[in-house]
Amino acid sequence: MTYEELLEIAPYSLDKEQKKTLLTQRLVKLTKHHRNNCKEYDQMLTSIGFNEDTIQDYSELPFLPVRLFKELSLKSIPDADVIKTMTSSGTSGQAVSKIYLDKTTSSNQQKTMVKIVNEFTGSSRMPMIILDCPSVVKNRAMFSARGAGILGFSIFGAKKLYALDDDMHLDVEGLKEFLEKYQGQRIFM
Image (tube, rainbow, N blue to C red; front, top):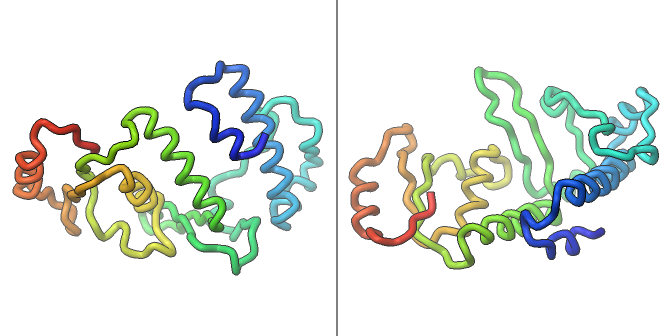
């Protein structure tokens, strides 16, 4: 089943076994793709004698330690195709995990999110309070998962207010004005 065919399925419409079957098929396909396009990943799978063609259930797939994404540049796309690099927060001065996205993957992420969120909110945009500060989305080429989440969900908001300033202080007055202005309306947070 292609990504486009999957996108036609209504969110939450499949039973547990149907989801398990689709997830297993897609993860095996992704494993093959990454194995064929990332030398380091192929070496890892080869070293453990892994054969994705024998997989019957996604739980049989090997999991990667998260630290590998901090220590290695694992990518299955050419450097020239990288349009975004997602990073973890890197708390306490630790190295950050990096996930490299190409145009297709980035677009598919957004399409999937729209499909799921519209199931709950409908397709109309609404006033939005973002429970973060504006500086988290400054660098669009390399930003945190936090910033990516904000940018992704921002497409559902018509008028937006960041509830915190860049020093992470609550904008009490701004919130009061926003809530008064949009009183009685559904607000997306």
